[in-house]
Length: 291
Image (cartoon, rainbow, N blue to C red; front, side, top):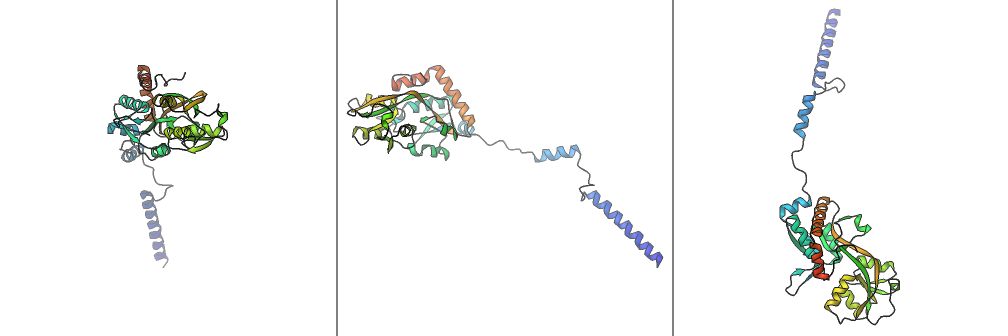
């Protein structure tokens, strides 16, 4: 019996040793399993490395499509409007076309009302906005701007018979006709004006002429263009801002490559005198540099 017990014990120990060696060889014990050598690591890295290209940028897509899409109002003379033949024309339109040409692509336009124009950019309905978008700190937190291509001075416009308003400060408590989301509305409100909502400058100035609003605020260039086309309109400028408002092409926050390409294009157009040429065509003076 003692001999049989000894034999069974010996067999059991041998089997246990064999099992332990087998487990260590299989690497089931992380403390005893051998790590792969450098060659194995290199092989694993090579086999799992991504092989696809990076996600195309908006600029890449523009180049591939052969066109860039700009949003603009189409009702904001002299920046963006329709001529007698119903062609979309204007200062912003021609600047956008010149930029597109520098990029080596065609400029296409999506016309939309101002109140929804930035939301459309967020929804990727177009690549950029060329519609006298003023550069503000609030917008810079969420979007990218090109370098400025327009410098305009704010003007308070009133009915020709109005004698109560002679300065920005006089807007306090007055009804000011403006698009509620425009930069000019913020200016008017900062002086205590009450905004009467409109769809754009044309409607705003008509309310002033009709006496349904006390004033409107816009850039002086837009008003001068209006007076050139309607010299008998009973409106006048009573105050001009000291500092210029800068406007630029608006882009989505992640489109830095497109911003750089557009900035390069604008710099070349400025150096060549093309921006000045477009400005003089529409305004009789150069509004593309800060005076």
